[in-house]
Image 1 (tube, helix red, strand yellow):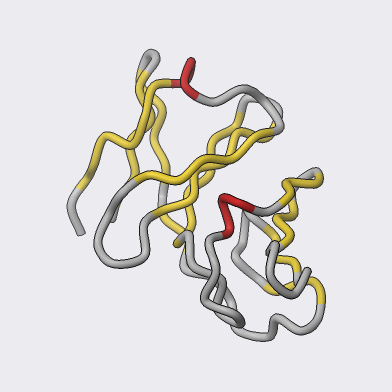
Image 2 (spheres, rainbow, N blue to C red):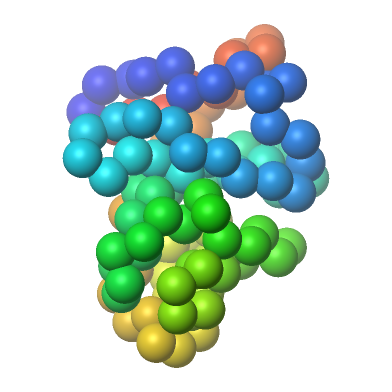
Amino acid sequence: MAEKLICKTSDLAPGSVMRVDHGETGLAVYNIEGQFYVTDDRCTHGLSSLSEGALMGDEIECSMHFGTFDVKTGQPTGAPCSIALRTYKVDVRGDEVFAEV
């Protein structure tokens, strides 16, 4: 895995999510109370973009079938999702967010 600059901390307000281009599926970047997390952007159930869904606390809700995942662990938390998301190690240095992708 290689480290990639994902975004600046100022690009993403607390309680929000955004998509970053990377590979076929892209990455979803989350700011939860000032802590940053990165997962694959594609839902493992319906193949839709998670960054278009609703971030509720530390869970992301897929906009297609409304299944949910724990952003911190990638584990599915609500049906119909049953396969975990891939998560990535995040390192914040100054105002830059990096992930091992």
